[in-house]
Length: 211
Length: 211
Image (cartoon, rainbow over all chains, first blue to last red; front, side, top):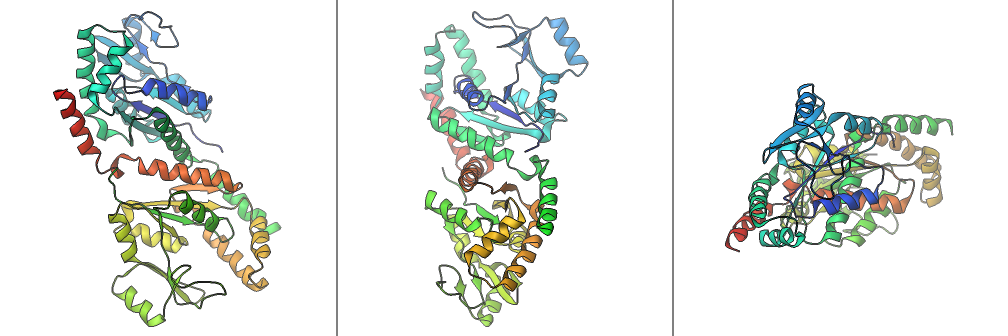
């Protein structure tokens, strides 16, 4: 069915399962394109340019943001993060949905942009904060003070849950995944998203008369 | 999760598969309650009072409609049809969703009622009108002139497709059923439907501090 691609925003405190769920969604529907953010921070070990982030210089970032080539951008812990606009618009016009892994600031800016009517936003809550901390510690990626910083940011992130269209409590990864699929399936069936319905109904009425 | 029940409106021209889909939905989730309409028309062979319809006298119908005990009502082919309000409100307060099999007039009136914000409306389109006519004929229930009347009503019904939140083309019953389940699942996850989320987030934040 002919339609304009959706902008699907997934937000959550880090450690709530968002990245795993995003990866599974893309496995489920390979036409989904994942929005790769641009950032001025340095790559962490194992991070690949163009896959995990577009790692770009501060000057280049500022130039893109200044000329409207970032759909949204924000400064977090002294580094700039943003969403390049061009790939999102290309996907929309091709009828493909784009998945965004952004924090509440990014979500607010994308919602407030001209592409706002195409946004479907989903917030993923952890079942508990101690559970979230355990997950961050067990990753083994970060020093204790970094984890403390992430937990503070998590609280800040969670405080924005009420700005989202849908809210999931991720106490079971498989159940959460099925719920995400249901949300995508339903949103694609919303009348105003199905651009070719008017034409279909017209041909339905005409075809019925000639039969 | 604590929530107010939804009013799920299914509309379609007769023969598009709506009744089969409604029955399968209730098998899938037995907490769904089906809104049994009241009517002043005579029962057809096999129709059971209180199950297919509440068959009531014209005087009683008029009295209920007059005192606001009908959520909606309309006259079709000289008979009155309406939705008794009390069972719907009881289900909502118990957090159970109610399924409505109503035509576009019923859909409009329920949407315009005080319960409008709780409505999720779904229109089911047939893949073609000749196919619809074949289905009506193969039922063997109606005389040719009744079928002609139904086809005229079908065209009228279809012309209101754009008033619905969701639109499905029922070219495959199993696929349509899965889509209906996705819509219900997603609508129940909408943030504003989940009344206990605020309390959950509050306990999440407090629980995290004491741990």
